[in-house]
Amino acid sequence: MERRKADRRRTVFWVMKLNPQQAPLYGDCVVTVLLAEEDKVEEDVVFYLIFSGSTLHHYTSTRKVNPNTLETIAPGHDCCETVKVLLCASKEGLPVFVVAEEDFRFIQDEVYDAAQFLATSAGNQQALNFTRFLDRSGPPSGDVNSLDEKVALAFRHLKLPEEWNVLGTDPALNDGGPRETLMHFAVRLGLLRLTWFLLQKPGGRGALSIHNNEGETPASLALERGYQKLHRLLTEVITLKTGGYSGLWSDLKQG
Image 1 (cartoon, rainbow, N blue to C red):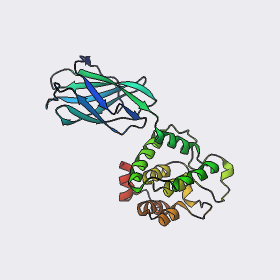
Image 2 (cartoon, rainbow, N blue to C red):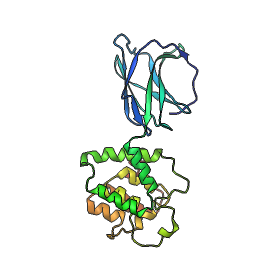
Image 3 (cartoon, rainbow, N blue to C red):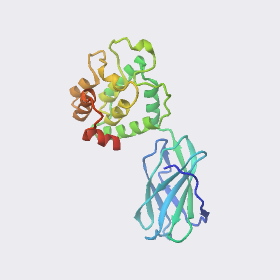
Image 4 (cartoon, helix red, strand yellow):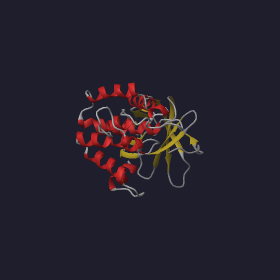
C-alpha cells in the first residue's frame, strides 16, 4: 500500500538479498528476502518493507518463512526505475529501525507491453484481426489462468484515457456491422478476469451484442469454446437487470 514516509531511524547493519531483484510494473509477484546466517528473525519483531521510489513509496508486510527468510508481495509502481528497498524492524516499546537495504527494479515486461497494445487497439479492426493468430499459438491450458491474472493486472495498472472505450472511440465504428472487439479477443483465449475487467469499462456491455465476421457474439463464442464460467458470466450480464451479483461475480470482484 502507498503511504507517506514514516519517521524511522536508519541503523543499517544487516545484509539482505532480494529474489527476484525486479518485478513488473503491475507487481503482485512473490519476493523473497534472504538474510545472512547470523541475522535471525526474532519471533516478537515485526518486519516490513518500504519500496522507496522517486515519487511513490510503498509499505508491504512480510511473512516469516524461517529464521533467515521473509516473503512479501511486490507492489505495483508508477514507472520503470530502480528503487531502494528498506527492511524495517518494529518491536513493542522500541522505535522502528531500518536494519537492511537493497536495490530493486520495476520493469515493463511482455505482459504489460501486450496490455498496452491491446488497449491502444480497441476498435482497430486490423490489429484485432491480427490478434486472432494468437488463437492458433495460444498458451497451454495450464498457463491460461496465470496469463489471465497477469494481463488483467496489467490492464488495471494502465493509465487509460478518460475517453477510452472497449469498442474504440471512432463514431464510424458504430454502424451496427459485424466486427471484432476486445471482448471477443478475451473470450477467445478464455481470459475470465480480463473479460470481467472489460465489462466494467465503457463499451464493455455494449460489446456483448456485437457479432464478429463469423456471426459470433462473445457469449456464443464462449459457449462454442466450452468456457462454462465465461459463458455463465456473460449470460448473467446480459439477462441480469438488478444490481445483484452471483457468487462468480463476487469471486471475480475480490480477485
